Image (cartoon, rainbow over all chains, first blue to last red; front, side):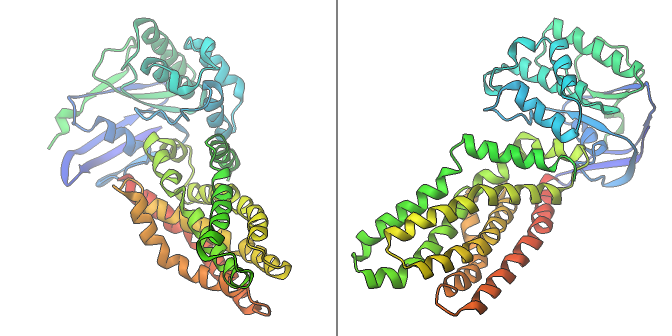
Length: 192
Length: 215
């Protein structure tokens, strides 16, 4: 599904990692590990096409969903409406949003303005958007940050469900997640 | 182009709930009601200068929300989410321009009617002003989005945006105000040409600026 071929990343004139190659097929999940500043988020943004590769190339065909630290939810709007914008942009069924919200335990909060939500609740909303997107490849940047134990296990269950449905997942995280990853790479090995 | 309209509608709703749609209206009426106090209530002077003054107010009203057009969405990751859904920067800029124009063009044209009455402009002049605004406000909306994209993420972006926009806005002002005189159809045609040019290049130029700012 995804092939990353000899990719290098340069940020602010500094080479962060070089010659990184990896491949992810359907039904696989990849954990990207490494200390802060090793380029985990940059790698996800390169795969998402938001950041150009300094060299090498990313080959990907399909749809992807990105959940990073930017909420992209309008703070003044109610949670359900803020999420519904994205399913309208996707042209997706809005019922998927409702079921994802209830799986992540957000059903009682659908009428609360986004700015009133806690950090963990906002994170769960992002993950619910990702789960409802119907995208084939999920890119999750530190999905466990701010989540309590119950939400972490929901996340693990959602990831298993996505993989068994023929999806693929790439996670950048320094926390342990309740999910058996197919593979993991340590980005520090590619640091220059 | 799928997913374009929900995004435009969302921008309009944000402008509406934030009071942004009233801003150009109130601004124009404020300027029009203050103007006679500043220059004296001389009907002849009003008729000669009032239309041009309304054009200046329209231009400044277009630049009022520049800091809110691009930067907040870029910071909140809204553009990232659109891009991973396969939308292009150019499409985002086009949607921003459309929403900005709907949010300030028609309200401004509406506000120009009571403002003209406050300045005692005659009917023919008001008609030419409205035609000019209909042709010129898309150019002003395009300009607003263009400088917002260029200055997004910079410190004191508002001041810089004004400085960048003013030279580009001068042709719009010259031909807009020039079209107020009877029999000045050529000025209207020039205004339409400038408007077309700015509306055509803004999605491309603003899209390139947004792409460059992301790296």
